[in-house]
Image (cartoon, rainbow, N blue to C red; front, side):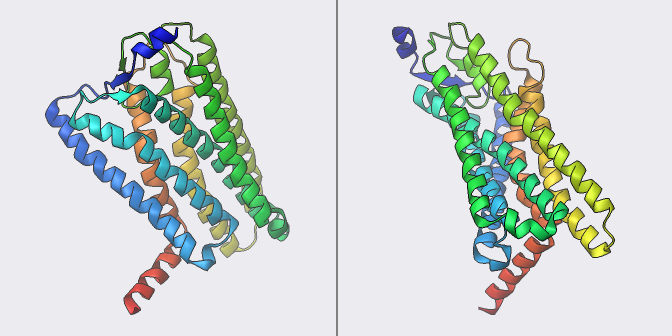
Length: 310
């Protein structure tokens, strides 16, 4: 087994079977999306760090979400851009395993952070008088650290099960990055346990958390409908709608990818769906929050005025 595995020192990512001209066009488009992802999430992080009015639990969790989005995109997009320019450029075995581990870590962490953010909104709207007690800074830090730790541990389980597998060819990964299902199809051994763990992991971090988010928002909707103040109603809708948009974008694509039926090799439509999931979602998240949140727009305005006066 060790001899078979050591014979494969690198993988070739097939990416998208397109003409060189189309690949060059996609390189430019994806480079712009990548730049907007880094700039948008970097701006959100900068605003939250520099503006004391945004030092609240909601924006504390948003800063973690922005961090995940940056690292999420950095895990897959640079290698994809390299492959668009040079499709024959391989990725090392170690690099492929690292990419799989990091992608799963950040994907799991984002799932859990979105649950934590929905809980924060639930407490803020359904228990406003106890909000500062329930969502203390100690509780916020504990929830954030738990999300990162659980995301890393779940990814580590997949990696531990993946590394002992023998890879004796072919070396071509039918994806634009080392996605775990695509990599498992190259193993010349029984991967039933690995595939069951991928499904179990997807259910535990997708279906379970999504169900808890739905329950949280049913309580939130009930509380909103009982509100008498128009201003309070508008504020509740503005803060919740941003989170709901992000949840919808993230969970809809992830559930179709990893919980839906999988027959045969990776289908092209699912490959493009995962491209949207890993490239467009991190780019759209800061845009959604900045457009829907009055606090973020106000903080950006104050920052620009301060820069203008200085």
